[in-house]
Length: 262
Length: 235
Image (cartoon, rainbow over all chains, first blue to last red; front, side, top):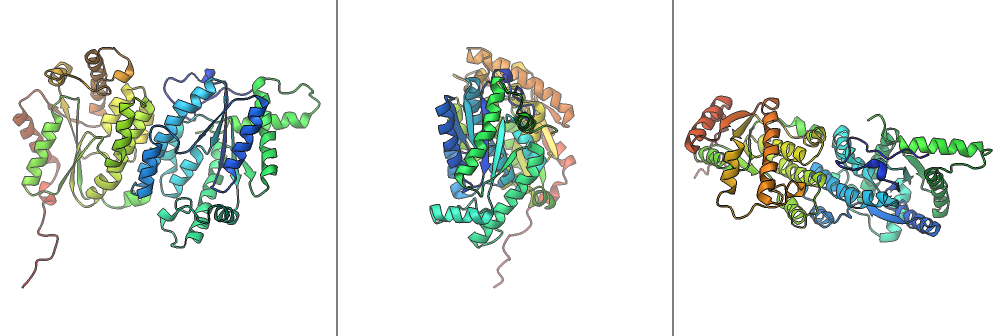
């Protein structure tokens, strides 16, 4: 059986966790890691199976997404202010989209979650403990998949797609290099290092994103299948597959215990 | 940020005023500001919920009632962080006396009443320095209520705590809400070394006390403007 939902910290006031019947599945990764493609494919797969899904992502709240976008255009906000602005955007979606959807038994596919927001803040000098406390309101996902792609491949994919590198994803605001290419590589390395550091604390699963979309999708589906089966309580009919049992047990502890020890 | 933020020495002084709506604190801090600027001190005044960038989002959220206790808290902390990072802290680094009409304690009181976890709120604002002096304008709830409600045709939705669902009557809701905030403040007086000012006294008497206390707490002459910021032109 899947563990009941919980928050990383004290969480949000007035949420009955035992009523959250759906699953929260997070896909993390840089721009160009194939995140969105994978989420689209997951959505098709899940909906074909008959499971309703909801998509959420960063900067999509009704409350502040537009204002946040405007503020970023001007690049005038301080790091801490920007972090809190993003936290507001996140909290609005958590309360108004994620939790209601989970209550209705939907599968929520999150295109990035608090980990990207935290790593961005940390590489810009915000204290780890502080940003963790800010996001102690977050719900612990049922699964977090981090698509790790080498910075060089990320550059290639981004350039092939847009012919330009994004200012923020290149960390240009940090002024580490005036050369956009090297700034991008260096920034993505910093972010990946932070993800690695967070992995222990939050226990998410790193997926090798250097492979083909299909190979990645198959791996994701396999892992998600395990979680969804756990949900129905019908973990295994034929208990001779000891390998699978073990896999289930392992993934469930990894996913559900993500934030323990904070 | 931890580093760059904390390494720069803070030459200035931070003075905060807190109290219920209707405690008269805004009048008092205004008089304080006038005194300091007219006497030639480096002074800067900042007000709760006034960052230009965040204001639009806050206004929309309030108007369309999109805010929950958590987003209400976060959007105000965003506003505060913006003022803190771009004004309060640099001005303190530059040796100013910064006067804050409401500081983090307002968030501690209001957000706690709205149901946010007290510990979480304090952590959210843990980057903010502790004021050198915090004046708390203490007034009985009844007095504060009558100062606000007498002659007012209407109280604003969030000001009245209507989002809390205490009562359908805005005035009744306001009373309940302010009462709860009053209790939060009372618990903070000792926790945060508030200097209590009896806000029922005449305004000029209060102001004289405030100035006297400030003079004992802060070596004011250090904060005078000295000369011109440009070298004098020698013909």
